[in-house]
Length: 508
View 1 (cartoon, helix red, strand yellow):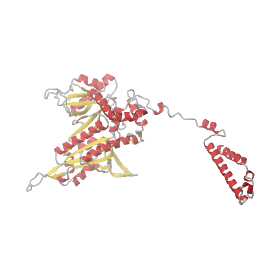
View 2 (tube, one colour):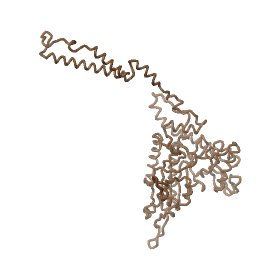
View 3 (cartoon, one colour):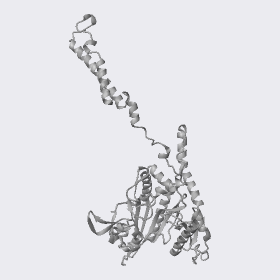
């Protein structure tokens, strides 16, 4: 045993030391030797102390050798018992699939091996590790600074909402019905009324807006929450893109006039666009959702739409909703008309409301767009002081320029239906003249899915890139080419005329 061997060595070293009385001559009363009148016993004590110190040092040295497994034949034995594990090979710690060859596997490995997230034992829920949370904090700080300059204030409302309140707005709850998670028990006791976990906070907050807003002087009321919401998606969960719980911000505002509300909707949308373009170097298309795709219970929805080149899919980046007066009428949020004359009865005006949200989906989009198979590049250490500042100045522009060129090259203007599905199969988004009716949208999605099935010979999976296309947005920047009242809708089964160019694509 190493400890016993060390002790034996200590004993051997101690026995080899000369005795104190043998090593020192008696010089107590020898004037020739310069002796003083010190007792002989005192000299013996000093010698003993020196000997003890040497023994202690020898013991400590032997102990260290034993602990390190050095000496006493322990070195070889220890190395045989604990061989070094092979954990530092590139195949184990690096990404071993290509982005083009296995995009799903590549995306998963980037997130896991990049220490961005980990899987949780509840399906569709993920742990955000410090690397990804730092990105989210950066987005938070950037956006929070801008909305505070608009007069928005942060707050926090409970995550629970009663069934009665949630169901108060029929269209709203129908839009979220399949996604709502319910609390039905407390311990072993069944609750008298089940409680929803918020999928969004309109119905949580607006009863209190009715309580707090008493006069036009209380307007605009602008509140924002940084929180998490739960939407129990039944579709295939994907980290950051489609999860059952996710972090986001949700802004909820009330205004006296429709014009004031609309101005804010577009201002917030522009902030969202700048999050992608300025922070993440990702191009987006600004536009408005169709009636079919707008926020449930809202008047209209504006959106920024991104593009994932590896799959050819579009992806919603953030939405800013004009709610109109729908919720204010439902919850009784009114003020007296300030424009009424003093001698007139002041009629009650329902306020105009907005809501807007941006989530951690931003992180997933960033990884999918900018990630590659090349890894880091190396700069010679002698050139760091020169190259790093220049690199930091150009990196944002280069990333955005490359992504923007890719996006633009994959938005195809299609006017002939026969070109629609082949363009989708080539990983493109399609800008088509469209009548903007819900029935036509449904037909296009169904027809493009069936045609893709005929061409590939495989049944359609809603999770696959070959699924049918849906409308992504009506871009604010409209191309030329639609002659009002003349240009036909691209859907061959539709007899209506086209109203706008509409962006269609397979999407997340």
